[in-house]
Length: 478
Ligand code: 4AD
Ligand code: MG
Image (cartoon, rainbow, N blue to C red):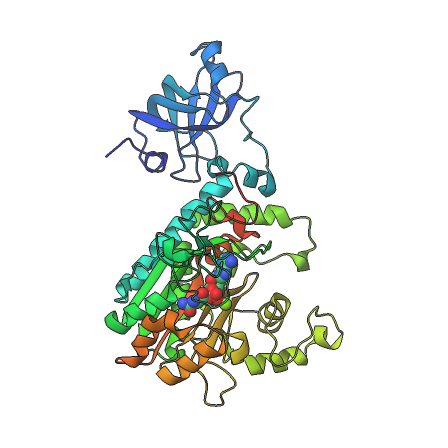
């Protein structure tokens, strides 16, 4: 169906057969004996080389064959004499679908900075780096669905527009149909959301977890995979205002089972990428090596593929928050006063602490459990001591927190207490509390930030570069 793509053509045995190739010009090179056009259609990192003889085409036509222009090339598929490719196309005809004026087209055959490319997010998928990232992103998404399908999880579609604040953190984007210039008011002067399309306040979801729990309490094992929104004003390399989250939720899973699943799941999708995205990963690995070539040897990071294989092949370190604090208290940076935020039991670990544990102390991914209740969400199951909760965060080198999850509080009374404690009106969560009233059960789940996973697998330093159209404070125009 449809024309052959370059990826398929490159795998074909060249027998002088006629072939049609469609794609965008990466480079054109003219020598005394031949004209070489490198064409790419995004199906693979590799270009196909098309060759014409000097004088075969008019100078006028060749002038329109520039980087970024789109061509249909007809010719013969032959074995290539040149290094770097096994097949090439001997051109018989060129049709120019669309030109790209070199005076205007921003992507020229030279190295562009990632910052510059962010400003032209509409064109950056045409670069090698971004097409590789987008293909890997696709492969990882596919691997996620495959993993859960094989493990008998059901894909549950949770709402994007919701009234609840699943994390209780108040970082929500409001959704309203009200005319902001003419807001309806109650007698007391408050905004009257009853006149809104939803008849109440509505937000974009920060997490599908609470609805996911409803699904798990009926179907046993579900997962969500959808966009989530956080109106936090963070300008970091790890935060987006719109990101995709994968949230499995399982009835009858305790914290231990939850950790086993999280570790197996993330290893499994990374290993899928290692097997299925070799060319793109190799390209990104070379890109990173090139970037680091001026650094002293001991400051260079492991080659990308080695780093990924290491994570897949080694067990994650598991320890409690309390044990982690003890390690941090005894650490060199703490003793030398090098941490920006001093360590003590009860603090919310900041990325410098997480990175110390993962990158300096254990030198591998770490799962931290049993955090103080005060710094974690209301729905987490209280430990027997009443001080900590059955939380788990998975921390990755270079990333920090990649997964956050927990065993959920299944006791109606305890959960109601926690809801009130953090100042949520139980009326707003009556449907959630009902799951604990009717046939409650132990259950657990977690959320994996999909972009942080793509960031880890591609080795990209900034999360804005692993999503096609990043949303962040003051981001793009479309
Ligand atoms: O730790 P978080 O906030 O946990 C939850 O939302 C739970 N409801 C998950 C669950 O138990 N079902 O977010 C989960 C993960 C984080 O570990 C991180 O990887 C990612 O989502 N994340 C973000 N990724 C990009 N930009 C942001 N602003 C993110 N906030 C969280
Ligand atoms: Mg978290």
